[in-house]
Image 1 (cartoon, rainbow, N blue to C red):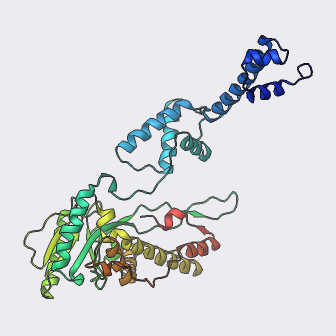
Image 2 (image 1 turned 30 degrees about the horizontal axis):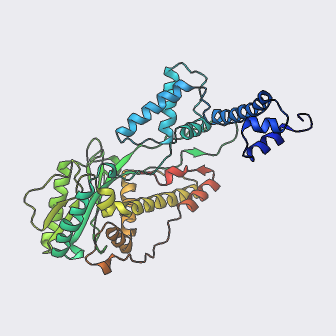
Image 3 (image 1 turned 180 degrees about the vertical axis):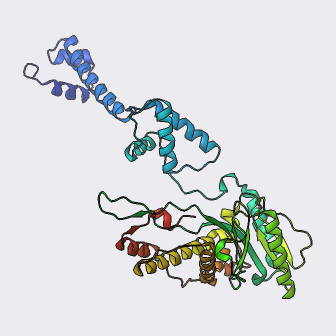
Length: 400
């Protein structure tokens, strides 16, 4: 208490009065300097609380140099439109810590979460090549080029073609074991095939896929005279201009025998060269960097195909475990899975993905069809594997 009057009462009463400081001090028999000190003490206390709150939000990382280096690198990487995953962020922070002599630094999940929070960073799903896409080019292609195609061709004769990478041996990379037991038996597979897929607009026709591997005659195919699909190879298992041309000429002959004229829509990747002398096929290229918006196969067809492939692979692995065998996945096995998976992609799924990309001849046909396909129970299959002592990381279920 100040005499019989509390300082709080004096401050509150003064704030609610219309008196000046000297007049209020005189009316309450208080020296003017004393009253000024009472008010100043409250102001100082309030400022201190504000400073403490700001200091709490601006607390610096104990590894400030790592923090600054990582942030600068992220800004550069994003300027190049490079994707940055959680694991990339962790590896890069450890690299900077090592370069800066921060031997005690651990790139824990907690540190990375605080780093993201400090700099207002968040992970978002990338949409193909859309970052550099020109919306005016999209509209011109969609409302001029595509409309012209749909006026000249029936939906059964409008095809989209695209390739995808397939890590065909993706299997569990972890297994249950007893404490102290040495765990051996496998490395994460990096074996990859490129698969070329093509289907028409109403989903009534799926062209036989082409698989591209690293070896033209792998040992598993030594005694095979025929395959379920077409197969080619090069050292990187990539699509090349030569393979592209060979494939289109084979399709051109097929449509010629059927006496059909078709529009084949493709993205403009380097390997997708123009092919002279095509007769039934009119090859139409999408605008640059537009596949995530305009390419029907990228609207869910390829995703459905890959999910089905994973399902078949996991089902066979579970069966092999129950037979006390180990599943071996060769290129020949992969070709079998690819053929089955492509056949299992439904007509409605394909038609809906074309509609989603803007391929519809009238407003009425824009409405999506009801798809009878059940969701692929990948998580259920993964759970069955866990019950048998194996564990598949979530990312492996949907890995490209």
